[in-house]
Image (cartoon, rainbow, N blue to C red):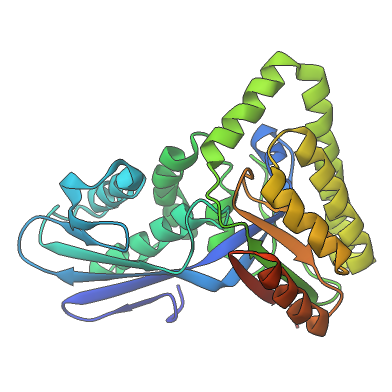
Length: 320
């Protein structure tokens, strides 16, 4: 646990968490295929806990009031807070929990997981307790299960990492060593996606036409294996091709929509090496692989002018 993650004083405690992106493997990861996720440090969550007499209160952009009266959209976080307090054997009173997030919810950027991890870190700091990574993941999963129904676990793992994550359910986590720096642009469609609904729609497809959909999920798995090779050895041009291929499969699964497709096709037209949706789809964000740093800034500006709700150019750096 580094100093930048948590600070504490007598009466307050702070916990922070960055965001995440799925690079490749969405939806297939829920059904046993691998996925690659990358930390997204440009946006994140800060939770500040203050000791204030009385029942627990939450102060956030979406809700101000007692935890007991929180709206359904915060039920996952409320359960996470209660679960963490139980785990820490802390009384459920005398706390003001201020949650400040720059992560737009429902965009596939790990908003719910980032909030959960930030809150858990702040509660551990308030209790003057250290935590293991496994404790953090287990407690965050309380919120993730409510948000996504059957979470893969990849969000929480990536939000607690500074390196790209190779994730396969029930297998040890791997962290990828990059061949070079990769310049990306993330563009927000401006529409909220419902990850849980998208996951459930793919599950229904799998049930109704199992052979066809299983082949598509396995194909996404193959592309993810190739993307690992691209990141570590083959480089950005091969990676871009794989991102385009993965997008085609996601479109056939019905999780991409017209708004996302327009942004994706525009990015390709403007020189992106590859582009696809990121996260659950049907709203949310796209990720485009730029040619270099200058191109990433130019592409970001063009996407902004084209109508993207928000745009973030960023670099995934090779570790020294």
